[in-house]
Length: 211
Image (cartoon, rainbow, N blue to C red; front, side):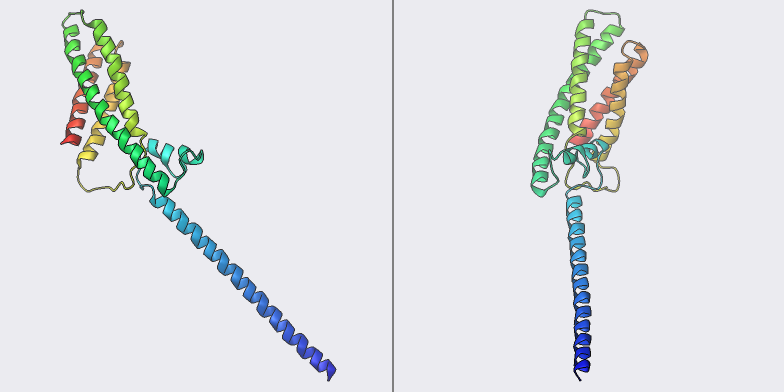
């Protein structure tokens, strides 16, 4: 009889042990699923703080794995993104102001450059000085646009918008501006053609974005 009681107790204890192990395993599995879900949600929240479409320079600095994130100089948080959007607004405002200064410099360059091509070299030094200042202001403005923090949302719209036209024209005048500086001493004719291309596309880029 005692042997039977001992066997029953052992059987009951064994069943309890199995149930405890199963419960513990289920608990651990549930906790792991919960933590996994939390990690996925956190990842989604971080991703939503950034637009899906970014310029490569923005992704290099401000992307989820960008330089500013890896160095913890600007961690990807809601509070920090709010600060970044304020910085973006200031940088783009400065970009616009410098844009008009650059356009004025291009006009002055065009006037003096035309006189130089006619054989009037009185303005050569002034032309060269304004050319250097215009190049500095141009590439400074370009840098402010390229390296500004990305917007919160950057949706792709159907058709040709003013922002898209501005970007397409920017590709043209950026290339033309590089060619203008490279060809300044190598080929006068190509230098002049590149300069007029840079001016025309740059003026058009400002107009389409402004109006």
